[in-house]
Length: 298
Image (cartoon, rainbow, N blue to C red; front, side, top):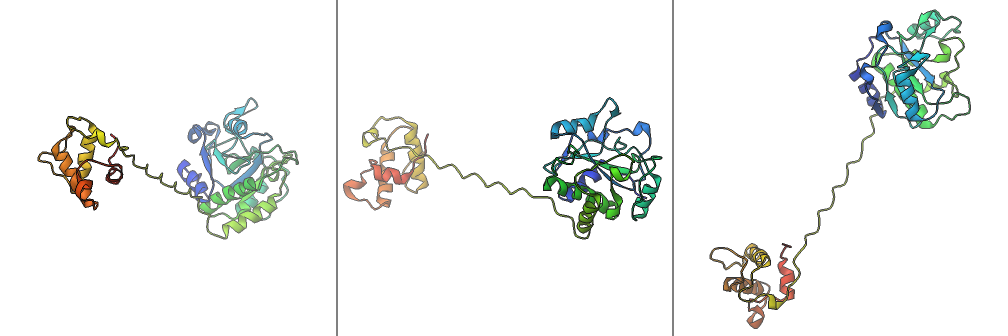
């Protein structure tokens, strides 16, 4: 006897099986519990929506329609393999079906023909609606079939069921044809193989490459005439700080914005550090030494 999974456990089971799951609106409290109890759970039922388009199909299964109030299932499986959770608790997906089929599911044995509608299936089955027109022509993409396999296997795995606990609506209720376009025996074969192995881990998103650090921007050489007595500029302060960082500062109280003899002596020390001498180390910046100093933009 299996207890209906909590919302968190259901979500985890699906994601642990490698599925992309979207929590649609208030799915955790969207149910028909006022119409009857839910559980014990005995299996998973697969349907097709008889609709096209993901958004409209998900909304239909969440809300239902005038003849059948929603939610119409627990999860909607889109053509790209995404599972949209739309209900949690009792949902209108299975309706009345054959009690002999239910007993076969519980015993995990071959299914008898469904020729009666005398047992409440909404109470005992998880339901997945798969987006498909159900006309036998609408294709079933590989991604969608894989998601059906994974979703069913996830619930079988967490409850300790075999693939024989997974049935189609057509195997439960007389007159139903869904899912149409693949056989449930083939799907159960896929589910059985999956259950024989460890669950596929969820796909991991590659870590984004760190953005390259922005290239530092340096002050262009302002020309030798810029460096004269009385010149007042933030560029001179930035230059002085770089000279101090290079170990060439000759300041008594630190660099300031006004060009001074201390700036000239400090720059001359930097020129000598670069290998200049004589008139080439007079403390007046030239373009080559300035570019080597790398004064940041101010």
